[in-house]
View 1 (cartoon, rainbow, N blue to C red):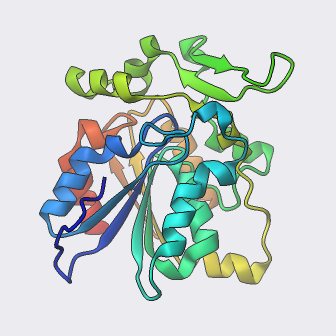
View 2: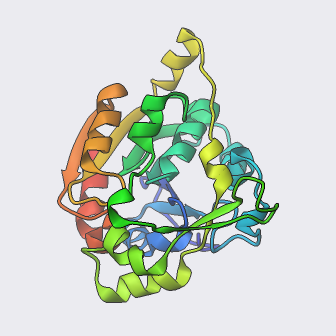
Length: 264
């Protein structure tokens, strides 16, 4: 989604936007326009299996494979070039992964209603904090077992009749309709994210990356109490809140844009 040949002012930042489960680079179109209109450079990543990817989500077998478009992108950045990573929802796992691998190339990390765990899924508490509990809505997921019914699922999809209620209740009907067309199942391998415990020195180096958390007060996917628990366990440099649903890039893009610029 990054236009070729586009000219940016030297003073502009380079934002790398990372979508959550089932979404793709397409979900950032409003925010990307606002950032580019303010002379910033924007790269919208499509993780493996997303709408902009040629890979079937059922064929993704590991988190590293799922996350490869981001890690390949970061690896290709020239020395001395620093980006601002922005992750939404499960995209927070990808942002944290990049912080472990490419901390010298990251100026700041911004988590929007995102999974923010210091070492990925490691403990029962991590799962409680980071995995959405949607039991109040009933049976909301469709699972696919492409390797056989006796094997773990290969992909997960949020059923269309639940998408607006859980993800987009404050969005326009036009935006939630667009999303229902573009949403895809996500690889079940996303849940295998493990970054491994690191020694104190490595952890300290990861923590040199400035982190900002943007809370979404009316979130039905990653509940406000889950967001607060992750903030308390791994305190970021700054916390701001929005009175929105899980998808402020649709429901309040101008306000999201303002908060991002103020956090820099």
